Amino acid sequence: MDEMNMKGRFALVTGGSRGIGRAIALELASRGVNVAINYLRNKTAAMETARAIEEAGSRSLLLKGNVAQRDHLDRLFERIESEFGRLDILVSNAASGVLKSALELTERHWHWTMDINAGALLGLVQKAAPLMKKEEGGWVVAVSSLGAVRAIPHYAAVGASKAALESLVRHLALELAPQGIHVNAISAGVVETDALKFFPERDSILENSRKRTPAGRLTAPEDVAKAVVFLCSPMSDMVHGQTLVVDGGYSILA
Image (cartoon, rainbow, N blue to C red; front, side, top):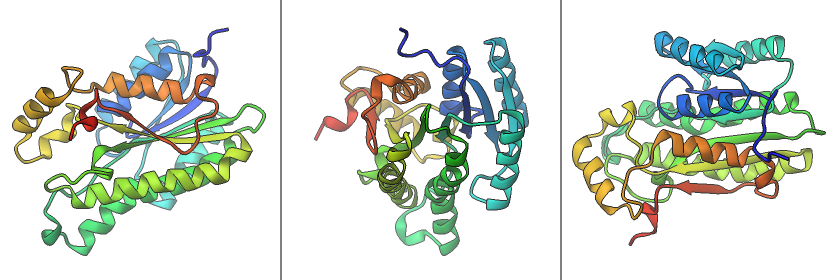
């Protein structure tokens, strides 16, 4: 039996039009998963990803909305239930945040970052869990970052939100494991995506990360996508409430 066979499943990938989200969506589609893509602004990128999903032989569904807003979530899940009838896989990947020193953060900066990076997962799971069938199980994967456990310049708000995300993953796993739902997180290393263009000293970050990564290269979006497939397969059946680090060994160095 192919332990990675996912044909016929239904997934939602938030922030799924570009970067890591796109790679996850396409990896799932290549394994026969029908994928709903959530996006907020870039419709062109979302449509391109949807076409790629269809070319892989899977169904796609485009869902525009801010997953941090409950009324948007209501609309998204109404469409998922109408079009798919159920949900097997939820990947909470949509992220945002303010890159400033802690002393420069305003209350608005803080709440925006916490709501989208950590708070959204709670609403997503509350909506998704009833659509996951206990006899088949369900899988939730949240995308985190090394800033959850390490101090990074200008990353105070985002790092705190990712730490909250990982804590929420553990608590959700405690509640949902008895229902056959797996809840885990992936902490990605430095990944060269559009999100990095907002970092001060982007080029030096990339070069320094490349040099100090034992694997000899930066983490690619496809590396994260393959880890998602693992966490959504029978190969990880007894993995609940964990954060899997995918960084080429970057974080093991002192």
